[in-house]
Length: 302
Image (cartoon, rainbow, N blue to C red; front, top):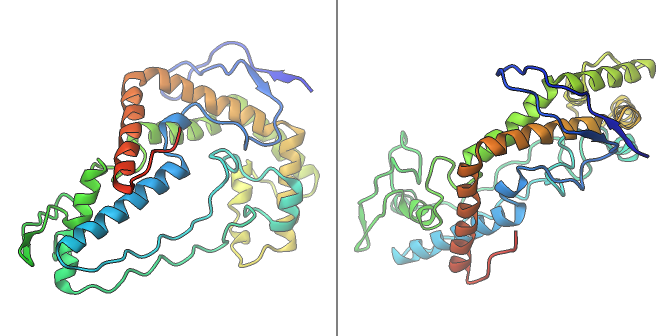
């Protein structure tokens, strides 16, 4: 079907920088099969699960060293989009929206309870966390350890801290995504919503919704966040509104424009932070190697 050409020229952004130019706006009904430039610097689901499994394994081994039998609570199984971009721009499938409303198929409409941790004695808790001080975050660097239990000295942060340290996950992000990558990922999404090109396509989307008799939402995010949808099951009104949202996105190429601008802001920031991000990729690979050593398996391919 062709593409919509991007607006030529550059205009100032809120930070005084030039607004990046995506070149062209591809016609897209969904971004699910498209990756963003920052993706290689963020943990995949498999990589995050592997690190979590390795940490659980190392904690269990450490606890056994102190004569404590410990099985961490099974991690909760959260709803996960198939790709990072599947629902980044809201729901996009009119048929699914007409059935499930604004909640993606398979996602809970209310948060599930956290998994229950196994009961521990006071001594075992110290071994696990490195502290019995309620003011200190368990497993953190502030939990100094040093207590002697069954002839062994508790490491800093307890067995949790030892496992995180072994996986090089004892830093500020505690083994999650690197702050610079997280900042670029979140920042581009926020900036894209204020970009004049996205604002214009939001206006066309809003007119489309109004023409169909739906409330005057400023943009798709506002529509999806309507407090009226906080119900155990989607109402008929929610399903109809969500289906119209998806159709108006398709009619006005909202996803194509939004994705292209979002990605352009990311490329701009990746160029500015190239050296730091190169170190992030190396660290991701190194931590996967460490997880593989703990689990006795090879790391997954990126």
